[in-house]
Length: 607
Image (tube, rainbow, N blue to C red):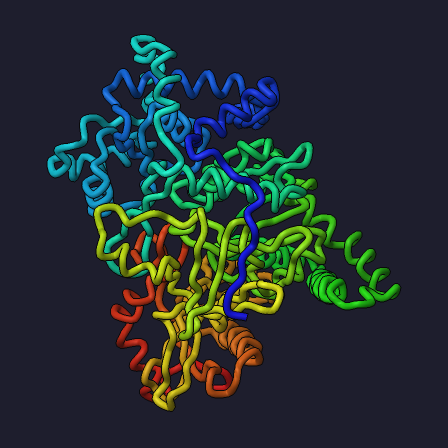
C-alpha cells in the first residue's frame, strides 16, 4: 500500500483558538482537578482545580501585558519541565502572544539564534545560570526588552504587575487569534545545520488534540486518567501532551529531575506515561541488574522471556495457551507486578515516540501489563502523525495515521504526511518551506512502508542510508536500536558508507557499568578500563551477534570500536531529544572509523 488516510472525527470552528479549548475545560468542570503540583517539602501532590488554574493564568497574562507584551509578540521560555512552564504557555496565549521554547541546555550561540530569528521581546528563564547565558549575547538582541528568572520570583513579579491591566483586556486578547494563526515557534534541535523555526498554528494543536482524544479515549480520557510529564517541554512531544490533557479532562503533573523520576512516578501514580525508548530501555536494564545483584537474575530473565512470549501469543489466533497463562501468572507474582509498582502501580498505558522502540521491548512491556502504543511524528507534524491505538495495535509498527491525517510512501520510499497537524511554514525561511513539501505533502526525510491496514513501519532516515563499497543499502537505525538495548551500551553509530563492510562506534553507559560489573562478579573499574576488559568485550560481542541475526550478512556489523567517553548533549553529539548528531560524530571520529577498516586494532565479534 502506498497511501492511507484516517477520517477526521472532530471538526473545529475556524474562528476558535487554544484559549477556547481551555475555556471549555474550565466551563465543563470548574472544580475538577486539572494539575497537581508537588510540594517539595512534604513530597505530596497538591491538586489545582480548573477554576484556580484559570485564575492564575489570567493573573500572569495580565502581568505580561503590563510588562509590554503585545498581541503577536514572541515570548521565550527557557526551563526544565515544571509547572511554571505550562502556566506560562497558557498565559502567553491568553495575552494574545506566541511562546517560543528554548532548551535549558542551549548554548549562548543557540540562544542568540533562536531569540534573534523569532524576534523575542521578553524571555522567562529558570535559573541564574540561564540568565547568564542570555546575558552573554544580550548586546546582540536589540528586540529583547526584559529577562525574568523563575528562581528569582518571575511569576510573582508578573502577578504583582498584573492589576494594572483589567481582566476584560485578557478576555479580549483571548479571542484575537483564529485557527490559522501561529500558536508557537519551535526550533528543531536538528542533527545537522542551524535549527529551523517551525511555525505551529492553533489549528495544528487544537484539531490534532481533540481528534487524538477520540482516537485514544481509553488512554487519556477515562475517569481518573493522569500523566506525569518528564519529557522536556521545549520539545513538541511534551507540548502536545500539555495541550492534549485539556480536552481529555485528565490530570497533569510535572517532574524536572530525571534522578527523582521513579520516586515521583511512585507518588504521583500516573495511569499513562509518555517517553522516548531510551527511558524504557533504562528501566528494563536497571531492573535486570538489580535482580542479578540480588541473586535473582535467572528469575528475572525467565519472567522477562515469559512476558515477551505471552505478549507475542496475544497476536495469534488462539492466544496464549493455558500453560503459558499459568507461567505468566507466576512471572507476574515473582517479578512483573513489582515492576508495575515501581512505575506507580496504576499505569496501564505507555506512549513511546522519538525513536523506534523495538519489538522485544514492546512485547516485554505489554507482557508486563503495560500496553505500549508506539507512535511517530516530528516537530513539523505537531508530534504524532501515526500511533497505535487501544483497538488498533501492531507491535513493531508506529500505527496508522491519527484521525484527519494521511500518510503516503513516495517512489523512493520516503514517508510523506498531510493533514491539519502539519506545520504551515519555517519561520522566515520560504526556501526551506518550499523544499519541505511535495505537491502539498510534507517530506519527512524518513523511510518507511505501509501495510494493508495502513500501519506504518519506519525503516530508517533517508539521509542516513549507508551504501557499502559493494553497493548494499543499509539503514543504520535498525542495527543501532537493537544494539543500544544492551545494558552496557549507551550510544551506537553504525558506519560503512563506501566501505567494504558495516562497522559501528559504541560508547559505554557509565551509569549502568557499576551495576553490571557487580552483578556479573567483576571488580569495579572505570569506563576506559571496561572498554578493554575481556568480559565486557565478550558480552558486547554476543550483543552484536544477536543484533546481526535481524539482518543479512551484508548488512551485519563486522567490527566495532568503543569510543572514549560518551555522546552527550553537553559535548554536542546529542540533540536535546537524545538523537545522535551523526554528521558531527562522523567528522570528529573519522580517525576511529578509519581504524575500524585498518587492521587488527578493531574490536569485533570473535576478533
